[in-house]
Length: 285
Image (cartoon, rainbow, N blue to C red; front, side, top):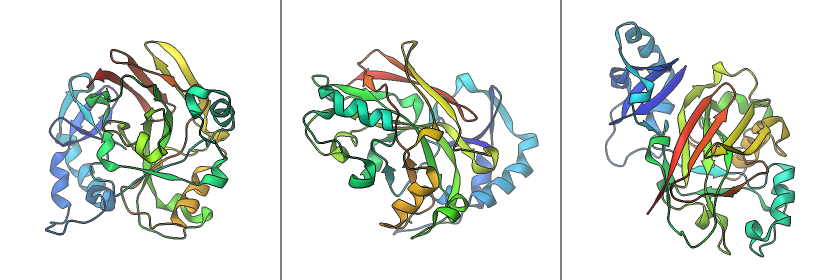
């Protein structure tokens, strides 16, 4: 199932070029009061929501996908976990290009580990990336985004697949400079997620997905998830060895070679096999 959040927090099922409004399925979610849960309620109750969707889908209103504004399919992630230099060729280009490493030492992911991005940086494709520091280099980084479906700590790689709710396309936007990654990658709008959530049962093998990114029609990045240095299951094992993963947490799995700068007025197109494609406008602050 392809689930999207659109317009004013409507819930939709994407089929072909249409979106079916199934917002009424959210009625099965439990009520909450202060203090609010530190995880995403929809993802935590995804099975119940999907069951209700199946009941109401035949009579749901249909809208043209081109006419809706797509938001992040996960509204309230507890954390955004990101994997740096998780493709070997990107590690090589990062070390070779001063514009990328900015005199920082670029170590292997096995040595430096993962990092966190602020949840306040999360947007959907319709909202657009806003260049906050136009005087500095701002780069695109396309990544497979894995959405956690059930909580766990010290999850083994063998059991990791059972903790995945689904997949999306991620853009880990980056301003280059001397600061720590978490600061440079947590700028407002610098974590794009979309265009929708493809539930895990729809993708038989997430370890072999072709993907690519273009800027204004020019191909910049092109790779396959089989080339990840640390694979999807191993990333979940790695992350959960340090902190509990909760429903709605998002893991940005890393970007391949070909990262490059964008500026206001550009259009980024990101596409993943078996997930879909999204266009993201780059705007001035």
